Amino acid sequence: MTDNSNDKIDDLLVKLVLGEASSAELSQVEEWVSSSPANERYLADFRRIWEESRNLAIHSTVNEDAAWKDFRRRVGVDAGRGGIGSGGIGGGGKSVSIRSWLRVAAVFILLLAGGWLYYNYEHKGATFIAVHSNNDVVTDTLPEGTIITLNKQSSIRYERLFASNSRRIELEGEAFFNVAPDKNKPFMVYAKGVLIKVIGTSFNVKAERDATEVIVETGRVEVSSNEHTISLGSHEKTLVSGNNPQLVKQDNKDDLYNYYRTNKFECNGLPLGRLVEKLNDVYKAHIVIGDSRLRDLPLTTTFRDESLDEILLVISRTFKITPVRNGAEIILK
Image (cartoon, rainbow, N blue to C red; front, side, top):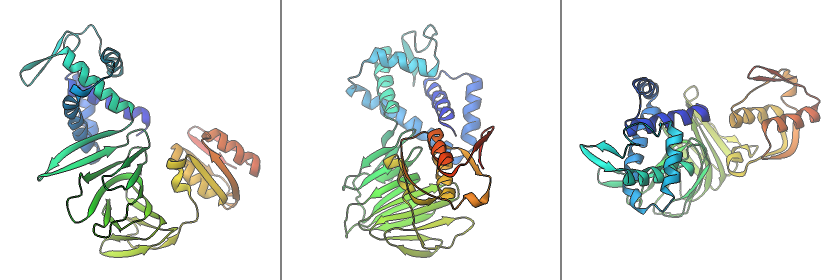
């Protein structure tokens, strides 16, 4: 989904939890939830966070009136309607004062504005933490000192105090891990059926669709999938996919995986074809190389926070290539 469609879904879910959704909007939510297990989990997380915001509300110190106006503007609720705007909301057979709901809305807006959602939940007696990055890159430090950077639209779940004999993380999306060493508690990441096990190291995991990529920056990691195991050292990687379940060790020849942490594309003799792959991924673009002979052209430069158009301009001037736009497609020839 695009950022706009994510915002639209979030607005519909806010209406849902407030009881303000129309029958047509309820149908939209039902269709969206049924289309993907990930969407079903997102709705469950959304409801949980909303409920958690009630508990957090008493600690809120933000401008409630401003937050409430922004909240109503986001969800498109008419201030003149009954229900919320008329002084109270029915919930569980009880009437909740508008002041209480203003505080809840203010906390909720704070969470959304930060671009990430963070909550606790109970499972079989253990307390777990979940962090969702939503539309921003988020950095989080775990209780034992490991630093995790989540790419956009990614999430992690972990036991609050790592009370068991390992430090287990469940990942959806992409994240970079700078792991605090602890020989007594190995650090383990689960991502789409792939297990990455380390003691102390730094590495990147990208788990999307039917493939999981692991790139080691420092130290060593052990990657397991389908009863196969491989050991990776610094600047090595492996890709596990449904089409290729075998674990194959490869050299990692560029630092493009770091873009979401550094906002830089480091190109040191980088083949143009590889850069185009990353540009399509980062900018959700559809760039096509019209002449296969262009794919291996080496590019040496660094792009820092440039827009896609600015990067394409440098490419076109460097290689005398003309970007031709055909609808959403950009053809380099």
